[in-house]
Image (cartoon, rainbow over all chains, first blue to last red; front, side):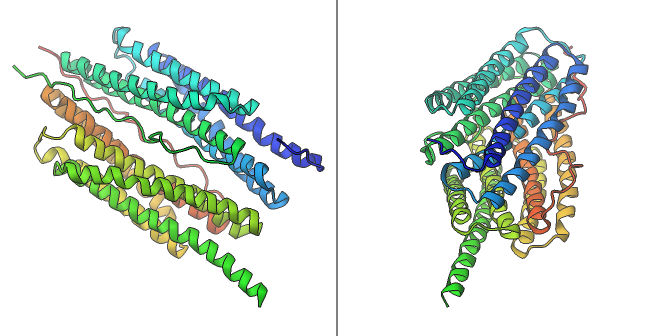
Length: 240
Length: 240
């Protein structure tokens, strides 16, 4: 339940933070899509664009931090307003990191350009990217509409992304062992998959922050917040 | 009398945040050392200990967040005090992530246990770990003593860690190409080196937050905040 503020400019300040977060989210989504597309289609121009685009998120995060602190000083907010402001600081940090992940993928697109591989090599990366993008879209929608319901679903689905990453890890290791000419590319693709898996983690962080904004309580920490680590060992092939 | 008591307890609240940050820092340092030791000496018990130890950082981060928000509500701090409090929230987030990195390394120690490799495989990881630990120690000392001087040095040295990571990337790829039985272990060691490189990034983030606490200004963003990406391509060996 939001109390209406007597001071209209205070409302405008809070709205500004929210608007900026949504802008950051849309920008991050676009960067993720373009970065993975640049890897798959060996599009160096698109990769360069993603790298250049990251500045927007860095600046937006700073802007939100500065504005948030100014609002806290000026308005001395309590309860849900304070949680909104602190939440905006946290969410913008997650979105900024997502931008860094997309930028890293774009840099890898440049590093492995001209080493073309069969389409099968990229299929897993496409699938995990779609899952992560769905998570991010759902959590941004939940943020905009202050929905509590999708939060648990987002959290649960993060386990699926982790599991898919683990199976991709095995797959890429198998390609490397089949032919050592695959080693460089597959190592880079493995790091790309890892970046996408981490984007899923950041989406889940945002869901948890949103839960805190709405309810005032932290979610129980039964989710492992660290990155998925490949647990299954791939049988090393014997050198003949 | 009442006033001075109030002021004293406010001071105590700020001191509490600082003390907790330093505790988190010491704990994170210990986890990094133990995680890398567990990989190098194949010590599964030590790895399990690191994984268990991570809970402390998760709980400490939450504690700092909760206390910080309580202080903001109760004391309505201005200027440097507010920066101290917001800075504590940011620094604790970085330290919590450092703990996650150490935990990931410990999990990889378990994943690759029993696959022993020559000591040369681990040398680079030891060196990069020493560099990252030095960065963390220096930045924690600067935080405790509110020193501005070491901040630029910490930032500059992060480039050396990035460069070392890049050379380790090449080295591990070479080991993989030399003998495909090295692929599984070297991939895990590569991710460990990446985690250490990211610990260096977090130490630099802390340095930048400290600069903000002391001066009230953000540092210029001429540092690339994203993780180092391996740019140089290792010549893929031809399969004969």
